[in-house]
Length: 155
Image (tube, rainbow, N blue to C red; front, side, top):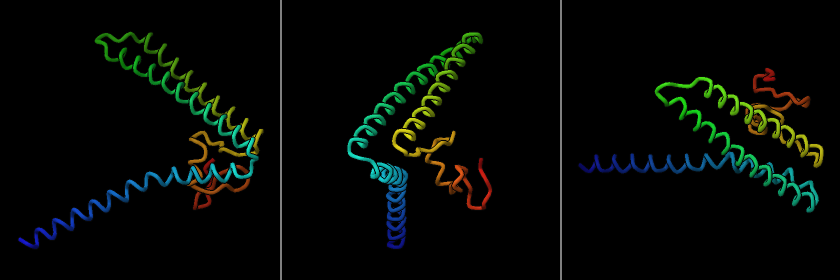
């Protein structure tokens, strides 16, 4: 009986330890991103830092609002598809609107990155898959191309 209790306690202990470490792993990317932002802003004057922070906050708010609009259209599309008799012309129209909104959002992101690069000399990443986050998969070779650990080019 004592062995079962001890084994049970060990299992609970191991599971709680593992769960605690998994929670910390989610913060790792945020910590890296925060460190990167701190490093990129350390070369700017205080005025530039304030201006850049304001610009990035405005961009984040705009992205949030655009994301809400896209999700609204997604729900509208789901509603159309849930009907007994689907009106495919309406589905096509809403699907095109969603596509156009996402394309506009992507273009605005490209313009924003180019503006920040030109104005502050900060590279925010140029990948079509999300910018800086892809740097963890490889290293830049100096020509703007990524190389993975095997030396193959990803672009």
